[in-house]
Image (cartoon, rainbow, N blue to C red; front, side, top):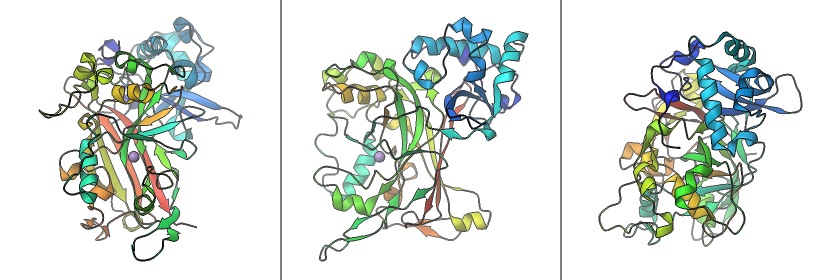
Length: 435
Ligand code: MN
């Protein structure tokens, strides 16, 4: 059961991998997220791992041993386990037991042999191929903020409370945290009196989002009932949907974003599973009285009770000047995923509702996650109110949008009384000058 708390969530569990017991680690024994990284010896394949503290368990080493035979699975790649939640649960239980203080000696030996320091791993995308990427627009606060810049009297479109709005993104330009982002060039028409010019983007922005990976897909022509939706979700990561606002403003009508969004999307390397997130489930967004109820195919009692996820999201910036002067990254915003108007279950069900086949490894992102407060705005467009209210940085600099050399660092973590804090690691990227 997806929402069920079991012994792997016990907050008192400690690991013999000492770094996993650090109260500040994102990766205690209660988390155990999956990741993929390059083979360290130059072999022509990638390795699947599970992160624990500052170490990674290498599955290729583990797969021939006793420990995994118990689970009757021999996963080498994330594709091998992402489609089967029963196997994931078995695997999580076995790893949790083998990693605890006072494990049986044989298990400890097997795991010890498989450990690789995370600092030696070059992480890549978790799935060998993200075949499709979809981005939603599910924060009503973000949608209202952006809408009111362009349509002050009528910020929210009439469809918003009925249909989870999204667009099909570009999978080929998804990059892993730490990859530099080259400022895109594109058409800019800031002066309505003159024709557009093709220049480096002037209003480069980030978007704080969460993404989820599809595990088991659905057949073309079939759909996924809302009550089944989360069984198709393997786990979550952080997403930065880099956005060129000036390009977007000129190109987006009538078909939506195109080149403004397809030059790069950064993801964090660790897939936090739905089971690890069980203690942090919360009710879906509470709609205002007078708001329409979701249409039948998007309505479900369990989804309403547990469909939300309480994930704290933080965005930091560090400019070149800040790095030169040893000034720590500065926090731009803090928001929470539980404030989304639509749940990930509703996003997935809606996506497949017309018969679109979702496939293993598809990435579906939530859209910018903003909250009610000013400090909860998940993009620079909103923080600087389209550039009209520049942001002051501790270096004495100001920002309306991102400059070359700026680095954006996103973090996510779950915290709840009586449970161990777990985190997502980082999603970072630095802006390079355009060609
Ligand atoms: Mn987005």
